[in-house]
Image (tube, rainbow, N blue to C red; front, side, top):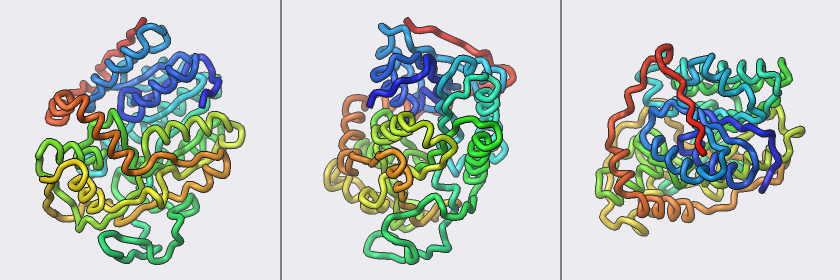
Length: 372
């Protein structure tokens, strides 16, 4: 869907998995200038930026800004001309938040406030997307859980899944930081009239996802199986998540962009829904049957903050925009496999590389490279 947009679009975390896919889509489908803002601290982001450069080198519309959302001046400079902002930069792992709750807070809460203030003070009233998480709903224990075969199911909830009326119940520092940021984004629409939209997302998967044990678990499982590496299940493997292809997520962004006046100020649950809900064991068994016959796994203790089951009810977004996911779970695995086959040497290096040494934010320089 091609959507007319303002001249500049800013994507924080724009060299990440979702950000790089989104930037590529915008370069292809709009005439907008696309500015990606990233601190390049995660594995694979430099390779994603190089890929984007190869797409945008003839258009002159792609700008890469190296900076950190914890630096308010850097964010204000980056947002000055933006007509749309996709705030994707975040600390994304529950495990990391448990180990470093202050760092998690600085990035997810303070970083989001910096983006909101930059948007408010720019005077452009940019349409601002924030990618939140299903973790804001906590364990969902009030619905009850039962076990059916090799997967959990809700005992006291209908088949459509969790909708936006479910009570907020933050578990883990990550749930707290993303949930607090989620509410700030919502309130900036009410108090300041900024057109913001919150996507509370379930599992997103697809090409350009590097995947590790803490985030991007489906990609991590598949790549590990293809590489002959051991896989650990935390818990009994009956945990259930619904999975959404990154291309369907981008279509959800476009659907909201096309219905801006209706969607501004809203919160939406976004995911694959019941048709794309799978258990950890089902995912691994599918990988073993279709891609890696020698795939095996072991079990360990469940990790803090892990929900036994989460399935998205996306009917609110569908009702407002007509959006629905299109790609099946098998096609998601197929696209991940294709990405691994085409990039196996690069993926191997990046997945085994130590995290980048990111300098303290107050000392980091903002590097802008206009790519022609």
